[in-house]
Picture (tube, rainbow, N blue to C red):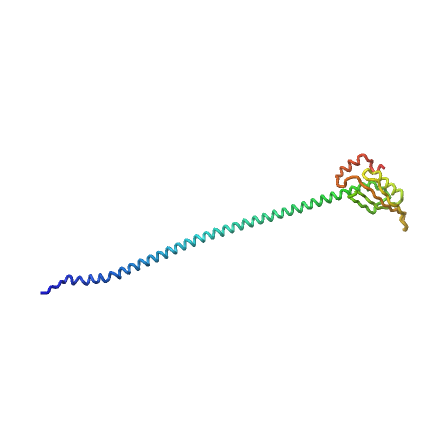
Length: 217
C-alpha cells in the first residue's frame, strides 16, 4: 500500500517559491542601499561645494571691501600729499620772492644813499647826466654840466668837504660850443665813498652827526 504525505507535498512548493524569491529580494535591497549611499554622497558633496563657495565668496567680498577701503585711503593720502607739495612749492616761491626783495633792497641801498648825498651836495646851476657806482672799489664817477665854472667848482668843493666821500679827481671842464642859448660847461669827476652801501641808513646818520648840513656850506 502506497502512502502519500500530502502535507509535505503541499508545503514543498511554498518553500521552493520562498527559496526562489530570496536572492532577488536580497539583490534589490543592496541596489537600493547603494543608491542611497550615492545620493547621500552627492548631497554631501553639494553641501560641501555650496559651503566652500559661500566661504570663498565671503572671503572675496571681504578682500574687495578691503581693497576699496585701501583705495579710498590712498586717494585721501594722495590728496594730502598734493596739498603738502603745493604748500611746499608756495613756501619755496615765497622764500625766493622774499630773498629777491631783500637782495634788491640791499642792492638799492648803496645807489639810493649815494644819490641822496650827492643831491644834497649838488648846487644850483649844475646837473648830472650820468652817475656810475662801482661797489667793488667803492668808486663813484659822475658826468655833468653847469651853467658856469663857479657852480661846478662849488659842487667839487662840497663833494670834497663831505665826510662820506674821498678826495675827488676832476677831469677837464670844457665849454660846449654852438647853439644860441647860454654857455654850458661839461665836466667829469671821480671819487670814492667811505660808507657801506648795504648798511642801514641809521649808520649813515651816525657818521653824519659831526658834519654840517650841506645847505650850511
